[in-house]
Length: 82
Image 1 (cartoon, one colour):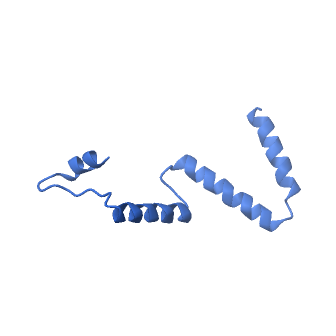
Image 2 (tube, helix red, strand yellow):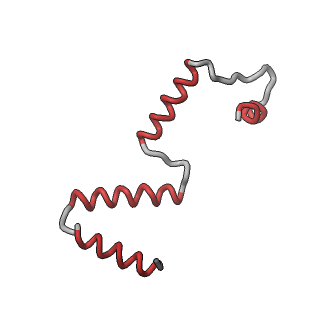
Image 3 (tube, helix red, strand yellow):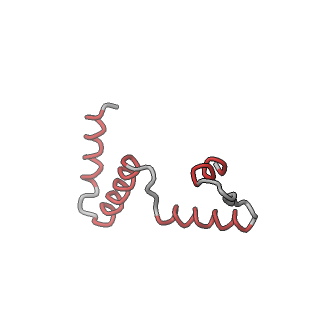
């Protein structure tokens, strides 16, 4: 499909829910989410953030951690821990 065809289909689908504020809010939230990812791939949802925190806590409890060596620069530490 071309961009023009996709835009027409999107406009048609939006017209079907134009009077439903709940559905429009959901569509808007999703569109903002995917455009934010396009603009900045480091952004994440609250759920993704807390999942990363939980994963880090689990790794810590298993002893899967790294410590800086005496005299080691942060740059070297980061390279070693990747």
